[in-house]
Length: 206
Image (cartoon, rainbow, N blue to C red; front, top):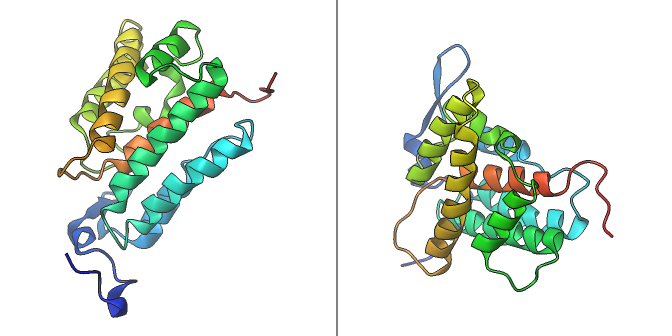
């Protein structure tokens, strides 16, 4: 394929033109760069997360913003967020040679990752800029809604889905796929929640 013409480099990707958001009053408006920027700015690692991880994660956030101009950057943003997540797990668990799925399971076993640490999932159904993404986010949103309603038995199911879904979605991106989705906002937000759980306020490296 040809490069985007230089005179159109800062034009929105045509895919963005058909996306409509609803505000709190129910009024509709077309997605804007300001919407993308505002939502991405809300996906933020806390200062207790080691600085090199925050710097690495920043690339995923920037890719989300620049996906306004090149939609395919959403896929790169997702993969980069998964990579930062794996880096964070390896550091926190001091396990440099363990596969991602085992890292996630161990973090759950140690109580470092729990269902109530994913605020981005709590608002998945109503978030103004979480658009169509991997089907697993729909399942997670439903589980989180049930958990939020006080049904504690859904907590373990929600975490189990995450432990299995994150490695599968990461592998699909890493091994190459012709399919595209704009689940980058959900993915990057979920990864942010997970990393923040690993490094709570006051955490200090040994």
